[in-house]
Amino acid sequence: RTDYFDEKTMPHIDTYNRRMYFSFYNIEMGTPDLEAGSGPVVKVTFRIPASATPEQIARIELDGYLSNMPLFSGPVIDFCPKLSPGSVTLPYMCGDPNEDGDCNLSDILYLISYIYGDPRGPAPVPMFSGDVNDDDDVNLTDILVLISYIYGDPPGPAPDCP
Image (tube, rainbow, N blue to C red):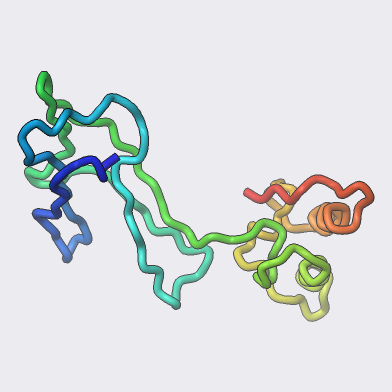
């Protein structure tokens, strides 16, 4: 929805506290007001360093600071919106604990090695990619769900990770 505006600026950035202020407005006379509706207001792009791990989470807080407070101004009223925080995590494929990009026999063997190996195999990456039945545990049930999904006739339910 911000593509609608003539001007999109970042008039203030505080690099020490990793925060910034954005401003969106129309400068052209006669530009109609933004239609009422819903949708994303701001798209944020992130550069994830190669050292990041799938378990890391970066908090995103949408709020104001100093005199830079969230404000929507209109022809009739100005109001402060209710904002919700979010987070950024690395994507993963449910049922692909070995991160090869596919849910297949190698994932079943990977889980068997992790659960029953002696020595134990590596943990799923991220851990919840191996919790294919979403019961907060990586165990034999997850292996059986993957076997049913991949080799069942008809196929079992698709993996359902947290």
